[in-house]
Length: 398
Image (cartoon, rainbow, N blue to C red; front, side, top):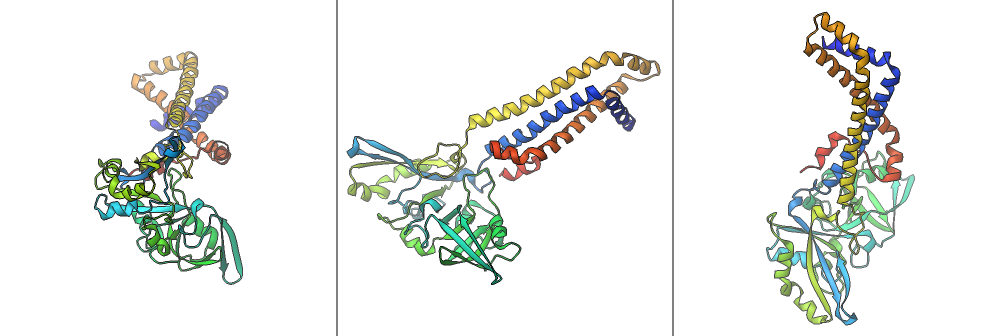
């Protein structure tokens, strides 16, 4: 019986091609807009929530004011050259559960990375015949526990020991394919700015809904002693702390221990006024870009507007469909009357209209999905809005 209703719905579409095309085209556009904008906004609102224990991770900010220059503020800094030891001090005092630090490629200086600078050129000798050379623009130098700290998944290698030794480097899955092609990458040598590094791990590509965006991670083993040293030559590092409980306040912990952490430095620099602040991991990408931030920040308001637009467009498409369908109902009165006389029940007519609506909506949804595949690349290039399949949304949920 249901199959007969579907056949009838298809025949009605073919019988009225003008209204059928208008209905299907309008719904297809509505579905296409919704399928693009709604998953995108949901994914963006979940930024960084794919990270393990994201609700217990915060990063440290430093608010600097220069009193000798009429109280001029340097604003919020996510890095501080003289304070690379702060996270390790908090951990030693058992005030936090764990910590990790990283230095972005833009701040690769003598003391922050293993002899590297901001401009990175890497080369690989493939099979002793094919020399591959390229620039690297998304590299960091980090503590050895960075992958374990953020719970980043490894494709090959051991994430707990990948950065343990000096001269180690871990690369993303995409980078491994770009550099080595189909050759196995683990154990291979990469020459970066004339220095040799061994590939010890391959991690899964980081999702775009994260402020962490890197394809290559160098070990800081040769600079670790300097990173932990509270003096003027410590590298500019970004501090991430994992609290013992989700309701702990990192700002309160830092403020309470300010004298212990900063007393020596404030005595040497009485012209400075420094306050500690902290920022929950899931809030970082929605904040303003502080000094030395390298990611593109996001606006919650703009995302809410996009989500509203996606729903509004789909509702308008459905309203258009309903109006056109109702306008055609009068022409079907004779058909309905004939069916009633023939013994059709009210539920039979109800099922018939439901089947017809289902067929139109399914055809429109399929057409809308096809339309998305055609425009997804130019749409991303123009608006920086990526198409996120609905079945991929769960990977962003902790």
